[in-house]
Amino acid sequence: MPCWICATCGTQYKRSPEPPSACLICKDERQYVKHEGQRWTTLHQMQQQGYNNIIEAECPGLTAIYTSPKFPIGQRALLIHTPHGNVLWDCVTFIDAATVEKVKHDFGGIAAIVISHPHYYTSMVEWAESFQCPIMLHARDEQHVMRPSQSIRFIQEDEQQIVEGVTALRLGGHFTGSLVLHCSLPTVERPFLCTGDTIMVVPDQNPKAWVSFMYSYPNLIPLPSKEVARMRDQLAAWKFDKIYGAFKGQHVEAGAWDAVMRSADRYVGILDGNITRDFY
Ligand SMILES: [Zn+2]
Ligand SMILES: [Zn+2]
Image (tube, rainbow, N blue to C red):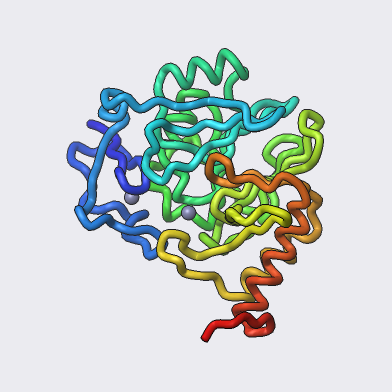
């Protein structure tokens, strides 16, 4: 019996002889079902179709893992190297023997997997079983787990240390359990945040960096201004200078704390009508 994978969002489901009747992640208003309808695949099919994972240095102390060709949302996972083991932030659906061998051989495996929110739960259980490590998810999103596992540990608090120097922070917004990961490590010169979809790194980065916040990215549903203000205020106490976003090439190179504060102020100001532009 296979574990069926939704070909639109990449979520892997628990074993069943036939595919589930629908993907609950895609039926949620934050995602979508394509015009053609629901499609399913399996890891075995993906291996036969020639998918592979690209594993490349993002910066010293940080390695990016993403699937080629792009599948399906196209996010990357980030392997954060720490003196206390590697933490995998977010996850990708595709995994094969070559990926496992390379991560074990080149980096010494994975100590823990932390995932920002349900869109990136993907085939997390396959990863956890391959690396014999726990998966840390926020308890507020437990109802979105489609393949339960003994490997999953639910974070109950709003701040949870994963290993020394790496802390998961619940900011909510996109999902009630949406996390960011704060990293302050001797291997990386400046503290940084990994943000998944909780804070989106937007294209406008020069001369000043900007980010944004949404309830749904594909369906363009914004967050209430008071929620964005709360996320901003929660992060204000943390020091970080860089942000690594969910997709290849998405990062805030410097001044990330200022970028979050400035971007949240603009978002709140425009929604509340306190910042004006020409709209009509
Ligand atoms: Zn789906
Ligand atoms: Zn998402």
